[in-house]
Amino acid sequence: MERLSVSEKIEIIRIIGDNTRSFRETAREFNRRHRNRPPISMSTVSRINRIFNDTGSVSISILKRDNNTHRDNWYDERVLEYFRLHPQVSLRVASVDLNINKDNIHRCLKKNNIKPFKPKFPKTSEKDWKNVLK
Image (spheres, rainbow, N blue to C red):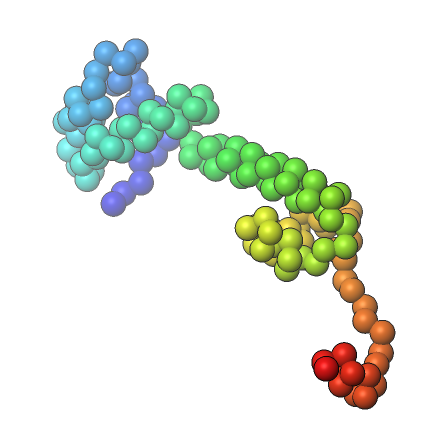
């Protein structure tokens, strides 16, 4: 399916008007005006209208950028609060507890200049490990 250009999306918003036409009527009118391109559906009109109402633009990239920012802030708040309460927890344990991908947690900590906890175990001999396992 051919992508709609920005000018075509603006035309769709203009056809809708002040919600005087339904999405089905708008799709029919747009398809009548543009017979040389593949027809659009009313769900396409609905999606373009929703993006326009949410962002004030017909560009999907603005919607994606806003959602990513919101998601990133939400992750940051959860991750940073978790590590304030549990400063010596590993990334893997935090990933399981928060149900967030380990790489996303690591990225959040790095972005906030926090080094993830990495436990270092003392060197022990094989004899010592056998005693621990008993």
